[in-house]
Length: 128
Image 1 (spheres, rainbow, N blue to C red):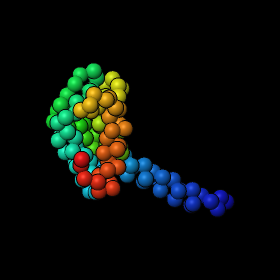
Image 2: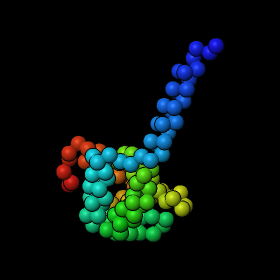
Image 3: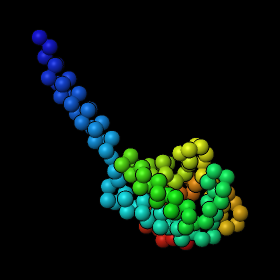
C-alpha cells in the first residue's frame, strides 16, 4: 500500500490548478494602472523618438503601438515588467529590441529606459 498516493494526488491537483491560473493571468488592478500610466507617460514624451524595426515613431504613435500590444497580450501578463518585456521593448515579429532616442541624441534600449520610468512610477517620482 502506497501511503503517499493521496499526497501525490493532492500535489498534482495543486500544480495543475496553478498552471491553469497562470495560463489565464492578467495584471492586477494596481499593475494595470501602472501599465496604463506608463503608456500615458510615453505618449507625452514629445521630445523623444522611438525606434522600432529601424523606423522612427513619435511618442504618440509609440504609445498607440504599446497599447495595441498590451490589449493583445493582456491575458499573458501579470506585472508591468512583463508588459515592458513583452509589449514595449522588442518586436514580436523580428525579435529586434526597440530603442529610444533622447532629446540630446543619445540612444538607449527601450527596455532599460521604460524600466527606469517604471521604477520612478513605483517610487512616486513625478515626471521631469
